[in-house]
Length: 180
Image 1 (cartoon, one colour):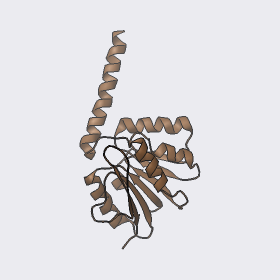
Image 2 (cartoon, helix red, strand yellow; image 1 turned 60 degrees about the horizontal axis):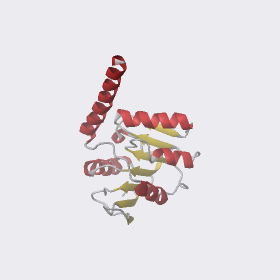
Image 3 (cartoon, one colour; image 1 turned 180 degrees about the horizontal axis):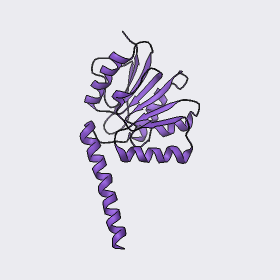
Image 4 (spheres, helix red, strand yellow; image 1 turned 90 degrees about the vertical axis):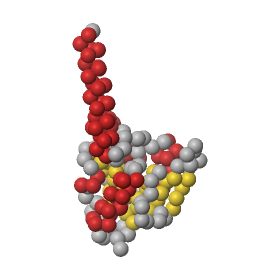
């Protein structure tokens, strides 16, 4: 019995350290979008667009998994640095047989945006600055729809802003990015 308790203790410690490490590395803990935010974000994206949908910071998979399930012919990609949330997403991916979903455990700053048509994210102010810089330097030809929970791109006006009817009046920003 003591070995089981010790094993569980170390497993919980490993998970906690993984989340703390990911939080220190990225500047934000893996936060789930609320149900209202997820539904609003899903409604704001057009799945008719050609190209991949990428979730920047896919966390526990609460947005990327439903997108992949609802649109089995769409290439869906998630990027997550935190080990444990990524592992949970991988378990869902394989248990649900989502062959159209690719999950990377790496920083979205190293992602290839050449085939993307839609980006979804729930980042933080520094992450939005990094995203804007990446878009300015990496997106040359394609038009991209960006749907962001809570945080805006610093230098661009959204095409649309939706305020949720929740306690925080959470904003969902929608952009149609075109290279200048």
